[in-house]
Length: 220
Image (cartoon, rainbow, N blue to C red; front, side):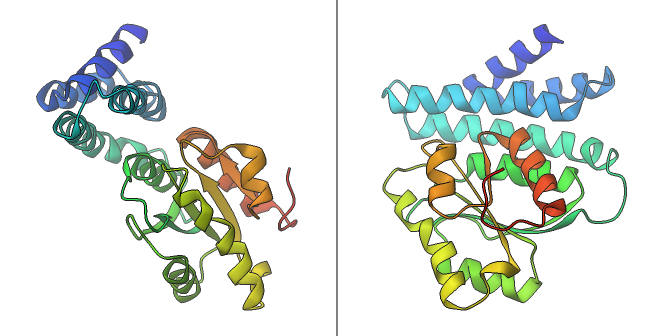
């Protein structure tokens, strides 16, 4: 499996959409775990792309090619992820990239894996105001509000989720999950989170734990 994952990472980094799709089909034909294929293949490739972009070795066109390759491959994997669901919704999640932040690649991977784990997910996209995020959570009676940030400057909006929920008197109605490249576990809980995900796999596991937790606002 390692050889295939290495090839997936390489295809993603190179933005080779045709090869990324073909490798997704190959992985499923060999009955590999689609969660691992995403996390250790395509998501890992995008992490490398992000690093290259940060070092100014990649520019926006290369990033977009890689993102398109990953997105196309995920479309191949989605049905196989859904086949592994146990049936019924595991819970309802409203997810978004926080206001001021236009990056949503990581958030999109988390969304796919949450849906595959049986959650009903409402994706509000990127650059979403905290007030809009909360309003949507109220509208759909969500269990979890999940927010991502890629920029350290936009992280400053994350504590507003718990703050505004408390001001509205509905803090105990929702669990809060925070994540994103610059977000660390300790800071997330200081910002009022009930759960934290360093990557998509941990985000799914955290969401599952929060659905059975009776303690709001307390670090596990």
